[in-house]
Amino acid sequence: MKDRKGNALKTVFKICVSGVLLFFLLRKVRWDELKESFAKINPLVFVFAVTCHIVSVVEGAFKWKTFLSKVSIKKLLATCFGAQFFSTVLPGQLFGEMSKIAMLHSETTTNSEIAASVVADKLTGLFTSVAVGIMGILFTEIDLSGSIRWMFLILFSFFGFCFYLPYIPPADKFLVRWISLGENVGNAVVRKIAGGCKRVYEAWRGYVGDGRRVAQNILWGFAVQFTGVIQMWGILWALNINISLIEFMWIIPAVSVLLLLPVSFGGLGVREVSVTGFLGLFAVPGNSAVSVSLIILLGQIVSALIGGGCLLLDRPKGRFSQEDMS
Image (cartoon, rainbow, N blue to C red):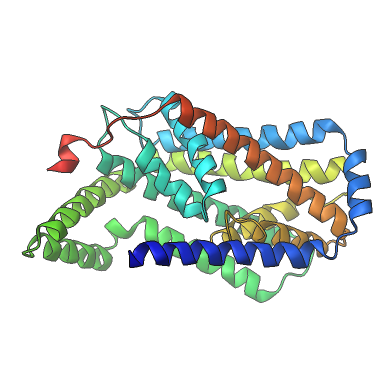
C-alpha cells in the first residue's frame, strides 16, 4: 500500500514539474506569432519529422536484434513501438525500457536473455549518443563551457564502464559475490530473485563478450543518433534557420541526457525547455524553437499511437518460460 502511494506521489510530482516547466516556457511565447508560424510551415515538414522518428524506432529494433538474433524482427518492431507508447504515456523513459521485458515473449529466447539484452542495448545506445556528442563538441563553432565538455567525457566513460562491468574483475567479483549471498539466504523470495539476477548477469556477460555483436549494435546506435540529428537539422532548414549539422551532433545527445532525469512526465517540459535553451545559443527566436520542439513531439506521439495499435493487435497470454520460474 505504501509503495502504491509512493509511486502515485512520484507521478503527481513529475506531472507538476512538467506543468511548471511548460508554464514558464509558454508564458513567454506569443501565441499569435506561434500560430502564424505554424500556418506557414509546409505540411511536408511534419511528414519529414514523423518519418524520421519512425525510422529511428525501426533502426532501434534492428539494433536490438544484434543481441536477440533468434527473435524475429517483426516481434522486435512491435515491441519497440509499444515501448514508445509506454514511454510517452508513463512518467519516464525507464518505463519504456521496462515495458520491453514485459511485452516481448519468445519461444527461442528466455526472459533472462531478453532482460539482459534490454540493459546492454540501452547502455550502448547511451554510449553512442554521448560519442556523437563528443564529435559535435570537437567541431562546434561556438564556445561551449568547460562543464559541458567534461559532462560528455564523464558520461562517455561511465556508460562504457557500466556496459563492460562483467569484464572488469573488481566489479565482476563484487556483483557475483552479492548474487551468491542472495542465493544462500533462507528467504525463498530472495533466493528466487538472486537466481533471476544470476541468469540475467550471465546472459549480459555473453552479450558483452561477443565483439562482433557489440560492434554491429554500436553501428546501429550511430544510425539512430544521426537520424535524430538529421531530423532536427531538416526541420530548422525548412524553417529557413541555418545552423550547421555539426551543432546538432551535441545538441541531440545533450537533450537525450536531460531526458534521462526522472523529473517530468514522459520528458514533457524538459524536452521543450532544453531544445529552446540550446537553440537560443544560436539566436533562434523563442517561437521558432518551440515550434521545432512541438514538431519533434508530434513524431513521438505518432510513434506512440503506432505502438498502441501494436499492443491492441498483440495481447500476450503468458510471458514466463520454465527456466525463469525455476
